Image (cartoon, rainbow, N blue to C red; front, side, top):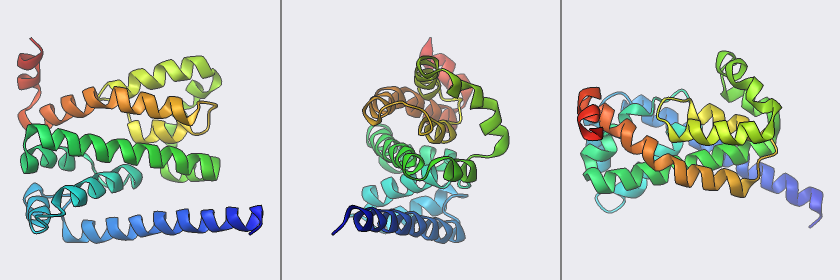
Length: 198
């Protein structure tokens, strides 16, 4: 098999997987599981053995397909599986989704980034791309904090010279804090978070 044929095959497989995720996301959205925690709980609880894997897949989808709100699924993870297991499943799904997003951006470049990141967000963070060292630092801080548009920044990171290894380490080490704090706020509100931090 030639290099060109292999590359085309890889592209076909990755695009097929991407579109399969979109179809699955539309199906989940049609079922209403992204809008209602109770529906998400019912859906996942039906798959007792595969519940955690199914939930992780849902988290991956909501990272890759940005039209799906991730807030409900973060809170649902803790409600469904408890604080420790819920945090772990949230973390795994979001990290995998972020890494897949970065890989897609590297594979298909600026066209897919502009298709998945809205113009306002892209223009807001575009100047970060001008300086690689500055970008790496700001990107790590943004991923650590639970207030930045992580999915958009992961895609924009793919347009820089950051290595796949460095990107992955930033995601793995910076995500736990933001996933934990964001889940806490969604479940209990800002007042509980302040009490926890104090």
